Length: 467
Image (spheres, rainbow, N blue to C red):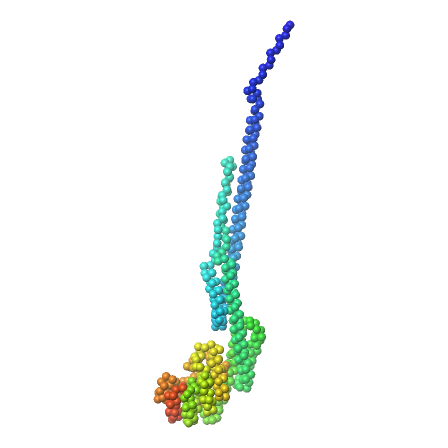
């Protein structure tokens, strides 16, 4: 049997093969897309987490900055203004306390200026300077997982106005100027104590046996001993208040010794007068006193007094004694009482302590040199005296004597009027004010003497008058 060959197998076409070979491509694409989505989600999440972390860090940083700045500024608000306020109080107290003690404008004015500047700086108080800081809002750009963080606003205090440096500079300026004033005040206190001790030492030495109450000298010795201890400590060695108190103690004790000594001298003179038959406690006495000489008319007056056998009291001006020492000497030799009427006739209450002292001491010296007689009586020009001047006079060895009958010869320059006022105004104990620099006064003196004697008055010097 003849065999018939099998027909050839059919071949697949190109389209069929494509459908069977590309299925895996779709799978890969799906896998890739899914992986990309997953990766994008992971990356987006990581980005969001990082953004939140940055946001939180910024919020924490700003909060810390706000808290730290507030703590710092609160301390500045307390410390720096308080320091300046304390220094200003101290400076003003010192400026007031040193009034009349530290007078140099170059010392006082810088402190005043520094205080004024400090007050201007403090006038509106202390204000805080601030700034607003913001952490921006955060929004997650994921529609499937939305999330947000709000904007955060923080107030940060950046400082105070006036700035701490300004306040500290003002405090330093006040403190430095106050130190200069305090040093000057210490020097003033030291100098005052030293001057009082310098005055008191010879008074203590020279008053031995010349006082009635020895307790005054004992008190002066104790005050001087305390003063020397403080002076040995140097400038600033003791507080100003202590130096002032010790100065006052020495001054007071010196004045007490002099007062006792002058009172004793006065009583001895009155006793001498009583021994010679003059006792103004029982006799009607009048004292004729002549101010402002010696002048061109004084020699004529001395002749009148000599002819009438009348003692008088001459209150001499120092510069006039310097110009006419022989006339002053003639008055002393004639037995008249010479007294101090200052050097050039100022109002003593308008002068400072040192100027008053110079007026008195210079006059004492010129009268002593010209006559050998040292006055122990002072008549302040114009009768201008207060407790301060009286104290200085006492410590210069001078007792203040004024008048109780003013003839006003200096105003009227009329002989008859001067005579009338002197005679009609006279009473027992009258101290008559006249001026030997006016010719009209000298012309009136003979009649005044005659009229007063006719009325029974005894003419004496002021140290013989009854107390």
